[in-house]
Length: 335
Image 1 (cartoon, rainbow, N blue to C red):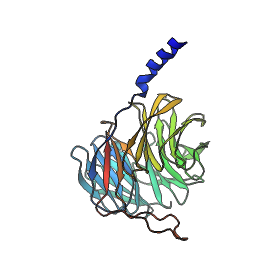
Image 2: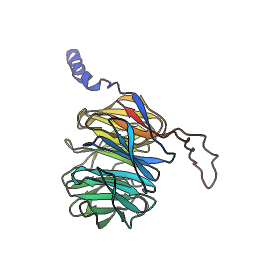
Image 3: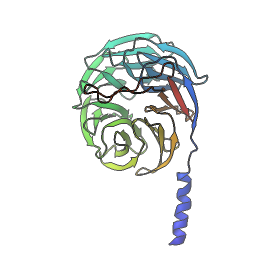
Image 4: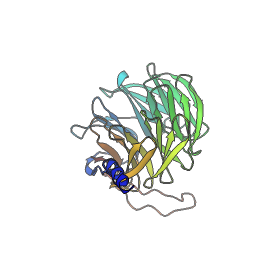
């Protein structure tokens, strides 16, 4: 039995070796307003960063801002559609979707929607549809990505957060206030299933493992929930840092990255489809709560800024936010 244990350990050890990831540099970006999601254009190796009322476009080969997309008030999400040469941007304060040319960054169209406070957005190449998730109206606005026309509004019975696609006709979205994942048929444009992901609480970021049909939800109670995307059953839970709003699955390295607002990055190893372990915790910077990765280079990107002292809590505002220090906005680079 001892020999078997040693053999088992030797087989498992390479899977659990730390990746020696570290914060390698910071990309400074002009502007003092808040931020949310960011997305990589893999073909051009450009990073689209939501930033207050604009979207900053960074050339990842030079780390320079090469364009600023204006008039995206209260911007939250950016969905890249390389096959259509378009980016779809949610304007949370305007209840609209800004559509721009991926090459020139010029405006193609600004589409007004009935949904209130559009937040996360997903382009599903399989159906050629764009799913816009509206935080205050608890629904999803669906656009035809080719014509840019609104084709349907899907009720979600809860506050939608991040979304993922299986690229085969199903779209998944976290429902933050119900601790659920809604499953949408991308052809019928209707909810076909609801998964309860308790004990996860307030799920936000969502990632998908296509090879194993597994969903990864990062939750407000410092927990990552692994869900079977076919049966809807919770497979396991993994501890993460506090304040996570983003997660990314690296299919090549079989790693899951949870960006935590407390100032850490939780790195989780997928040993097999139902077995996971925390590999390491990387120090980042406070406020770095959303994340994306270049699949081409394996480099991770997380936006944040420096903060001043938060004002005193009041009855009207029991949880006041600390002010952003001017000229401190940046994108963290982890390799």
